[in-house]
Length: 535
Image 1: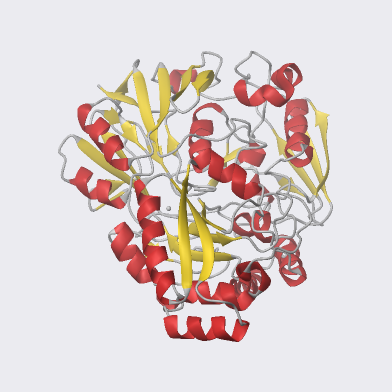
Image 2 (image 1 turned 90 degrees about the vertical axis):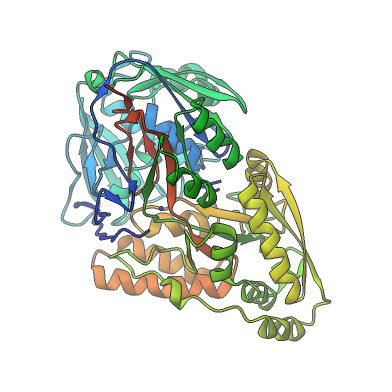
């Protein structure tokens, strides 16, 4: 879904601009489910990874999907990354940022031994160019994340100085995701808007080809600074939306790794002696987005929409009250996920997210009363766009049945994933299944989606109080005060019901027992840089 198509583990989380972030699992393996595989591997071979949908643009500035982030993990490194414990660590940077006492100047030093896949050397100028492109490129999904960046400049061959408009606490976490990916300046000059079809970054593998809807092929990059630790010759990513088909291909050996496996398929894999299951805890959420003001597309000024859902918050609240989150988890996900009713994971140490047991209970009677108070004709007709995966279809059917009892007539519109993203970005929808894989800092789950004209605010939500709280959360370094801000922000967001949070998934991946060296951390990405076949 969006833009995913992570738990039983204990979570500890602390984020400061000049410090680090932590997401810790109580164990590497629990109940036969693991996050890493440390068995020794041999060199050579091709690994085929099945994704649950076709990634969107392979351009770090424009990309929005979790499946795309998984592909980027193989070919586009970032200034920072997270490790097995969820701690932010340097990747293309050599150390965590140096921050001035006033929080307005941030200095990042970058590696001097790295080259892009096209042979261009990584330097501070390349970092500056990528940061400014992420911020300024029309349609950039990174624009909101990097909006506080006033200026970036190279003060030496390996030193970048970032000047901020105001202190920006989430910056280190932001640079541990796509905003921290550095692109070859030569490739950007050569390909411009077509960079998505010719991506060139620093990474263990380089891009070879993409056949839409069929495969993305990467090959080991001999120029990679740590190439001696890369074992595979090639990695192939194949979109296979049907989890049953993914599992069948895993059993036959046609694919070796299945990403984002559905609970029903995970249960099947746990009984297979030739398969192993990986799991990582979640920082994200899944829910249903409602169009309350998206009339001209992402980044444009919101406007009025003549639907009951958009006109009256009571209608949206009624829809939210029609949903039984616990039952949805049991019926659709076999109890392997958990109910959610807010943007922040309950395990966050920055701001305590709403725990599953605190979520509102279904109240169809109250929903009916709200519709009567709103004076709308019942049943309220609405179209819900769902992706074409079987799991998304089952979710849609359960939502349809529950909403019907509360006075809604929901029509399901199964839509191919890339098309669903395009249509919802453009505002061509009533409601859609909306989700996010999650970020370490709560700002990463909120600002781009719920701030007025945010880079991924497909809902058209515009609330001055929400905007004010987002701005305060970004600049407040005191952890207690930040927690208070995000608690209030969660209440305010939930009162708008533009994004109805429904469940928080766990990220499951299944691999053949012959595959080792995989890494699946708290961000939900399947990392293949050290993967291979057992010796």
